[in-house]
Length: 87
Ligand SMILES: [Zn+2]
Image 1 (tube, rainbow, N blue to C red):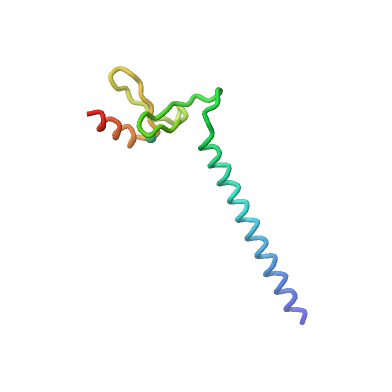
Image 2: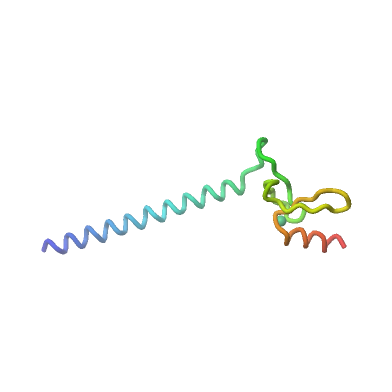
C-alpha cells in the first residue's frame, strides 16, 4: 500500500528532525559550559568573587566597598553571605 510508505517516510523524517534538534541543543549547551569554564583571558576585565571564587566580568559584578577596599561579587547573595561570615 502506497499510503503506508508515505506514513513511514514521514515518521522517519520526524525522528531525524528531532535528533537534529537535540544535537543542536546539546551543542549550544557545550558552548555555554566552555565559556563558563574558560579561564579569564587578558583582554577581558574579570574580577573574582571572594566568597564563591567565580570570575565575573567587572561590568556585571556586584561591587561593595568593605573597609576601604572594593570587593566584587557575582551576586548580592554572595556579598551578603561574605559580609555575614566576616562578622
Ligand atoms: Zn558568588
